[in-house]
Image (tube, rainbow, N blue to C red; front, side, top):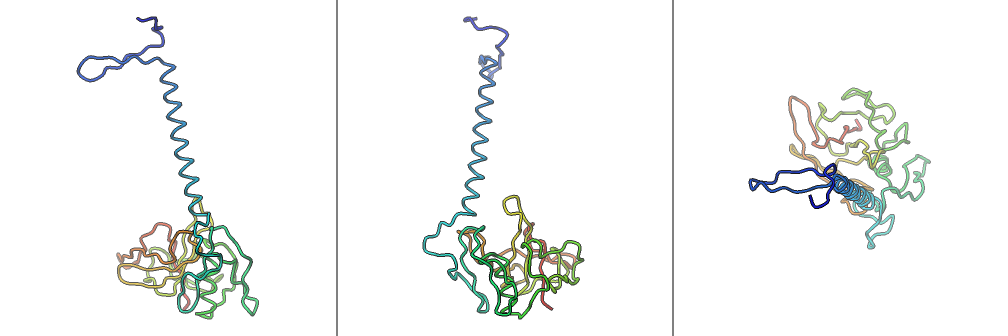
Length: 226
């Protein structure tokens, strides 16, 4: 059959016209290999693109430390790439506010300046602010704040400190301040969300069987000064 070795030939039925396509076994392996390489390239490109989006500073109109927002007189500063650090920020009394201008630095500075609250433990990554061993509505002694789980029995309130879980690309988590609350949604204000992300984000809020749920699976819960 045209000099093709029968051991390397397979026939595939095509449509109702009884036509056949001749595929050699090596050719099929080459096609599969090409598809695997192509899909791997697409995946790696997507990962590289996401990393660049989250870490590279694309805005030429802002410099590190440029105010981009504020809540009750406490400013949110532009940080460029999410991994950027511009030194440690200490209050006049020596209290640790955090690394400039990470998300943790803003929430601790907000609690210190506006709510006059100092945490017994002022260190740790964002995800460390939520202790999964603490029951809903109980005191988080490290932060001296009441902790509520998502979902939780207490409706989120303005000035609550919201905590997000870590991800594959950001294992340190994220924290922000709840700036507005309705029966259907909450708004947060955040520092260091990424070079192109907004300082204000809204999430849907729902209540079911006496518990309030912020509809974002990364939200671990919220802490309250009371």
